[in-house]
Length: 165
Image (cartoon, rainbow, N blue to C red; front, side, top):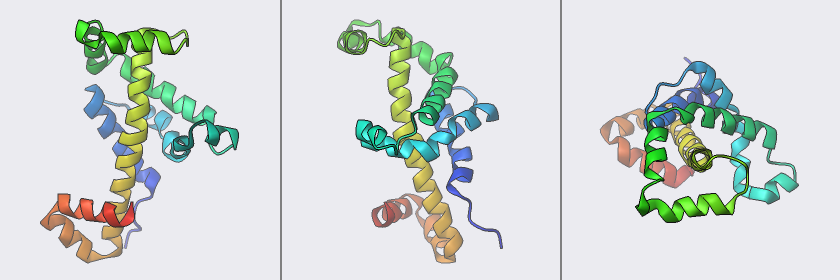
């Protein structure tokens, strides 16, 4: 019998699905491997600056993954659409906020992409990887879980995450 997949094995499948869904372009395996360390090191980002100061956040690994994700997203159909949308009057408050709150030397588009990448890595990749890993590992442990998943996948996932989140 095969062992259940590890979180990193699941993440190698989840990352391109999440990014292709958000950015509308195919991800190469080399891009996946550049972003993959975020699955291990990005979890501690929830602690913010405190996590960095006590040494549990690894800024080099997290930063490299984020840079790779931004590079992937930069020339995507979604990024092109966002670049146009941020110029519209209805997004003027967001545009002003991005232009005035962080003096990082980045372009407006890169600031916007960085903020979206932060959310897509933390909530999209980490959350989806965690849920998927728990779902698949539970089914490997107990065949009844396979039947419950097949009967109603949505309800199964809701209950699994309620019990094991």
